[in-house]
Length: 62
Figure (spheres, rainbow, N blue to C red):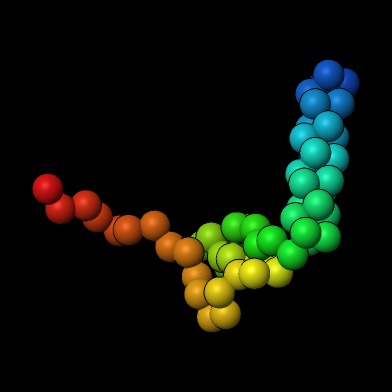
């Protein structure tokens, strides 16, 4: 990865910490989270439906 400006690196580290804290909190509460896995959104954790992948619709008919 290329070098980031000091301010940018600090912001990125803050965002990473916030995401990690939120995912840990959801894990402790037994809640699921939607995470990106194998190129698509997936439900993961506590009360996530088994074998269910949250995928957005490919098109919308009007």
